Amino acid sequence: MFENKIVLITGGTSGIGEKTAEILASKGATIAVTGRNFEKGDELIKRLPGTGHLYVYSDLRNRQEAQSLIESVIEITGTIDILVNSAGVALHGTVPQTTDEAWENTMSVNLNAIFYLCRTVIPLMIQNGHGIIVNVASTWGLVGAENSAAYCASKGAVIQLTRSMAIDHAKDNIRINAVCPGAVDTPMLTAEATAFGLDIADGKRLWASDAANNTLASTEDVASAILFLASDNAKHIHGISLPVDGGSIA
Ligand code: NAD
Image (cartoon, rainbow, N blue to C red; front, side):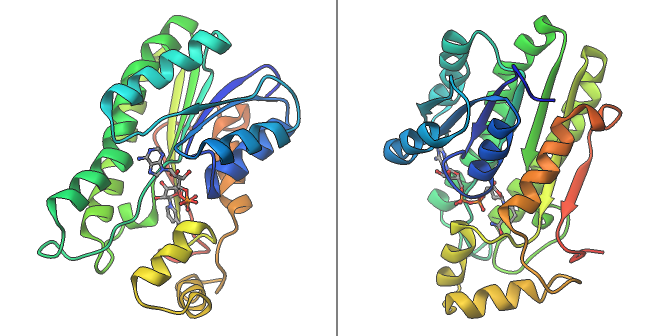
C-alpha cells in the first residue's frame, strides 16, 4: 500500500516517529527522517529496509529550517506524498512556573513547526492532486492535565489546526488527521518520569494505571494508528483526532 510513497517524518529519529519509519519502510515507502541527532538519523536510514531513505538535519524551533526542510526533501526525492509530524517536546509546569523560554520552545516545536511545514507542503500536495498529513497530538490536547499548561495548550491547538486544515483541503484530495496518544513507552516518557521526580518504573506504572486497560502504549500501537490514517483504508476520514490511549479518556 505504501510502495513508491515518499514519507517525511519529523521526530523520526526516536520513539513514535522512529517506529513509524520502520513500519512504513517495511511496507515499501521511501522515508525522509528529520531530527537533530546526525548519528541516530544516519544509523536509522542505514538499517531501514529498502533503499533511497534519507536523513535531513533540522531544528524545528527555527522557522526557516522548518520551511527549508520541505524544500530539501523535495530537491532529493522529487516530492512528498505523506507528512507525519511526530516531533515534540514535553516541558512541565503550571502557568506561573512556565518561563518565556519553555513556552516558546513548546509552541515552536509542537505547534509552529507543524504550521510552517504544512504551509510549505500543502501547495505541493495540491499541485500533485493528493496528499496525506498525520499530526501526532496527545490526549492532553483533548483533556487537561496537571503541571503541563504549555504542552496541553500546544496539543489542543494542533488538534484544532488539524480540523481546520482538513476542512480546507479535503476538496484538494488531501486528508489531514491527528492521533492522540496517551502514555507511550518512549524516551519522552522516561524523561517525564525524571521531571516529575519519579523513579522510571514507578512513573511507567502510574501512567499505565491511567488507562482502562492498565497498559502503556508501545510505539507500535501508535505507529499502527498513524499507518491506518495514512492508508487508503482511511480514505473517508478527515479531521479526526484518534485517541490511542487504552481507554484513558473514555
Ligand atoms: P521522543 O522524545 O522519543 O521523540 C521526540 C522527537 O522529537 C525526537 O526525535 C526529537 O529529536 C524530536 N524533536 C524534539 N525537539 C525538536 C526540535 N527542536 N527540532 C527537531 N526535532 C525535535 O518522544 P515520543 O514519545 O516519540 O514523541 C513523539 C510525539 O508523540 C510528540 O509529539 C509527543 O508530544 C507525542 N506524544 C507522546 C506521548 C508519550 O507518552 N510518549 C504521549 C502523547 C503524545
